[in-house]
Every structure is written in C-alpha cells, then in structure tokens.
Amino acid sequence: MKVLLACPNDSELAASFSEKGGVSVPLGLSYLGAYVQDIPGIELAGLDNNALKLKPEQYREVIAREAPDIVAISVMTATVSTAWEMARVVKGIHPHAIVVVGGVHCSALPESTLAEPSIDYGVVGEGEEAFRELLIALREKKDPSGILNLVYRRDGKIHVNPRRPPILEIDKIPFPKRDLFDPSKYGMNVNRRATSGKNTAMLTSRGCPYGCVFCSKSIYGRHFNQRSPKNVIEEMRLLEGEGYSEVLIVDDTFTVHKKWILEFCALFSELKLNMRWNCHARVNTLDEETVSAMKRAHCTGMAFGIESGNPEMLKKIDKGITLDQAREAVRLCRKYGISTLCSYIFGHPGDTRQTMNDTLRVALELDSDYANFCALVPMPGSKIFEDLMKKGLIDESHWDRYLGHAKLAPAISVCELTPEELQAAQKRAFWRFYFRPRYIGRKLLCVRSPAALFGMIRGAYLIVLFLLQSLFEKRPKD
Ligand code: B12
Ligand code: SF4
Image 1: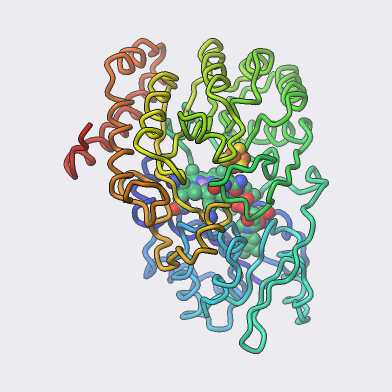
Image 2: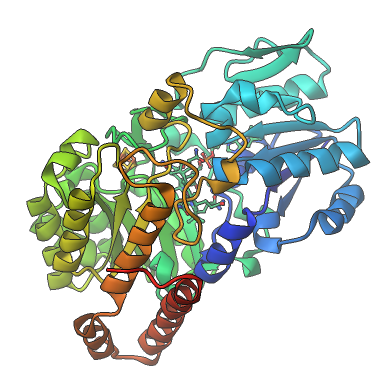
C-alpha cells in the first residue's frame, strides 16, 4: 500500500514571503512518516509542494507516477485552497485513492474540512496514533469508524469522533523522518533567525500551557508535554552527524520550564555539540541564569511575542507578560549576544489608535534586532475565532487572506480601525522600525565575519525589498 505524505504549497501571497524567508521541512508529516513506516506492506513517499512550488499540472504528473493508494495532506488555514486543490487533483487522476487530511485547520474545523467532497477522512489533534490505526484498518479493509480523532462521512453525514489523550511518553515517538523530503530544498534564512549553514526544524515539546486569545490551539489546547533533554540531544547529535549545523526549534514556547532548559543546556555543553540553535521564547520565563546557560549552549536567537505595548491590552488578550519583563528579556539577550525578534500584533479586539501607538513606541524602545508587525487574524482554533464564529461574523470563503502579512489587508477587523487602516499601521511600523539611522548603524557595527556580513546583506535586501514594494503600492502616512 503506497502512502504519499503531501504538503500543499503556500497561497501565492504567503509563498512570495516564505520563498524569501526560506522553507522548513514539514515536521508534522515527517513525524507521521516515522510513526507508520514499520507497518508491514506500507511504502512511503513525500511530496512537499511548499518547497517544490509545482503548479497543479506539474505535480499531477508526480502523483500520477507515484500512483498512491492513500494521500495524506497536512493543512493549515492559509493553505486550505491549495490543499483542497491538491485533493481534487488526486481524485481526478486516481479516483480510488483515499485522501486523508490533518493539521491545525482540520483540527479546528473538522466538519467544514470534510465538506470538501474530495476528502475522505480527516484526523483531528495529534496525528500519529489515529493515522497509524487508520492505515492499518484500510490495509486490512476493516471499518475505521471507531478510531478516536477520526472524522469521516457516513450516509451523507459527517461524524467527528471523540479525541484521544495526547501521547504522554513523547520520547517514544520516533524522530521525524526528514528524509521523505529532499533536504536540499530547505533552509531558513536570516528573517527566520537562522545564521548560516545547513539548518533544519526541530520540536522539543508539544503544546503550550498559556492561553493567548489570538493563538490557534486546535491540536493540544493548553496541554504541554516535553521530551527529555537527553532525547532532544540525541536527535541533535544525529542531525550534527548528517551535516546540520543549525536547528530552528519551532516549539510554541521553548522556555516554559527553567529546570528543563538548564538541564538541556548543561548536557549540550557537556557533549560539546557543534550546533547552533534558536527558539520561540516567552519574556516572563527568562532570567540571567537561563539566558547565560542558553548562550553557553550555542543559542543564537530568540523570538518573543510581545503583541502589544499597552499594559491593559496585554491583560485583555491573556498574554501573561508585562512590559518590564519584555524590557528585561531583550536586555539580557543583548548582554549575552543572543539576537532577538519581537513580534507585535495590530488590531486586537478593542485596540485603538492610541493603544497601537503604544505598541509602536514600545517596539522602538525595546529596539530588538528584528521586529515583526502583524495584523490580527482570527485564526481558527483561537478564542477570538470562536467568539466571532458564535456571532456569525466569519466568512469561510476567505481563508487565503488568513495571513496577517502587511502585503494584504486582513479579511476582517475586530477593532476600531478598518482592515485597510490596520494594513497601513503595519506598514508604518515597519518603516519606523527598520529605517532608523540608529538601527542601521548598530547593524553595521555588528558585522564581524563574512558570514555575518552575508546574513546582514541578505536580511537588509529582504527588508528593503519589502519596504520598496510597500512604497510603490502606497506610502503610509505618519
Ligand atoms: C514552523 C511553523 C511555521 C513555518 C513552517 C510551517 C511548515 N512547513 O510546517 C513557517 C514559518 C513557514 C510558518 C508560516 C505560517 N504560519 Co506557522 N507555524 C509553525 C509552528 C510554530 C510549528 C509547526 C510544526 O512543525 N509543528 C509540529 C508538528 C509535529 O505539528 P503539526 O504540523 O501540527 O502536525 C501534527 C498534527 O497536526 C497532525 N497532522 C498534521 N498534518 C497532518 C496530516 C495528516 C494526513 C494527518 C493524519 C495528521 C496530520 O499530526 C502531526 C503530528 O502529531 C506552528 C505552531 C505549532 N505548534 O504547530 C505554527 C502555525 C501552524 N502557524 C500558523 C500561522 C498562522 C502561520 C502563518 C499564517 C503566519 C503568517 N502570518 O505568516 C504562516 C502561513 C504560511 C502558509 N503556509 O501559507 C498557525 C496556524 C493557525 C491555523 N489555524 O492555520 C500556527 C498553529 C501557530 C499558532 N498557534 O497560531 N509556520
Ligand atoms: S501565543 Fe505563544 S505563548 Fe501564547 S498561547 Fe500561543 S504559543 Fe503559547
């Protein structure tokens, strides 16, 4: 039984952005592949169209050649249209092939996912066990309808089965099968905080215990589970042996437990791994002991969600951080030479021009190495989305616009500004942040090696390109 694990391409707009930022290996599909590869009679193949960027008429040929019995597609909200397109292409060539989808979007909106006729099954939540059971049932021609986490159609009705608890012993999950995908196609660059060298993505935990209202939490809710430091280091050593020199830890929040980080960093330093890494962190979880240990263990960058510069707004969105914690975290990173990327959101429910000015002011004050300004997008799986859905304010035909990039006004605004005004505020923030003489001067002073210079030129090129595009579209007013 041939199983094709497939990632749809980003929507055109996201692609124009991610092509420049680099593409990362689809970890979800790589984990699924690793979990099912030992099922007797299963043959696996991978098709990451996000990396290959083939047009439907081109990947049609790949699918025709592979002749899969089952096509497993991973979908997030921004890739709904390309994922459904891929499912239709599969059915057009091989009408008997079974199409299964999973991922954040399917987990948030299982019924509307299965409303797409070319999809046979959906899997909600963590996928490994349900996918394995489904493949075994299909191979043995048994009825899969009792499988927990499964979404299926029966007599014209869509059924969403109850969820199973998340896998607790996550050290037992095999390392992702990255070799399903061509490694030469991947690599993140500077605006994804990678520095140089062969890099890949990695996951050291699953879920996040915090409850920010804008965050999509359809897979784990607030459940949080970590691999052991030893198990993580083992994977890093393996990657090092494969020639990787840098890892992007894509965990929702890497720095949840101080004890865990200290243990991980101690082990990393003891084994003298020749590997750099960066991560998503929270400003309320850091102190000097932690940051200095991370630096000793070759951490090169941290990304923080600051989200708003207004203290009341931070409370309203349940961010659970203070601006003083943000100041301290950025200060510590600067002290230890760890680069910082701070992200901000314009358009929280109740955001006003005043609160958004606070956000820009704080971004300039924190003066992180990089900053990202998004417009709020009510992502399926988030608390904000649920509230809007209950009020009947979500239009499901606009998923392509669920991105939050400054190149496109968001589909909907939940604050006093219109979507176009939010987009203008975003652009203004990028201008104000990146075109400061102080910022440019500091970046130039940091150049100490050819690799750093290359990274900087590449980063500057991306930023300038983005800003010039914005300029020619419409120069935002202050
Ligand atoms: C790394 C990452 C990225 C990377 C690369 C994504 C990639 N190639 O996989 C980059 C930086 C490119 C990216 C971009 C974006 N991202 Co992103 N990203 C993530 C992040 C941090 C980790 C993804 C990951 O690898 N997870 C680990 C794997 C193991 O989990 P998984 O993919 O969910 O897979 C499991 C299950 O879902 C399931 N499963 C998944 N697929 C399938 C398929 C089948 C058939 C089955 C059975 C099961 C199954 O089984 C897997 C194993 O348990 C997640 C947050 C998160 N924790 O997931 C956000 C997240 C996925 N991103 C998000 C968003 C919003 C975006 C952007 C829109 C951001 C922006 N404004 O640009 C863009 C969209 C780009 C696009 N595709 O058009 C949201 C998505 C919300 C939603 N409803 O879709 C998330 C959930 C963050 C959040 N909490 O809000 N992202
Ligand atoms: S935004 Fe970050 S900290 Fe907040 S719930 Fe999502 S992953 Fe956790």
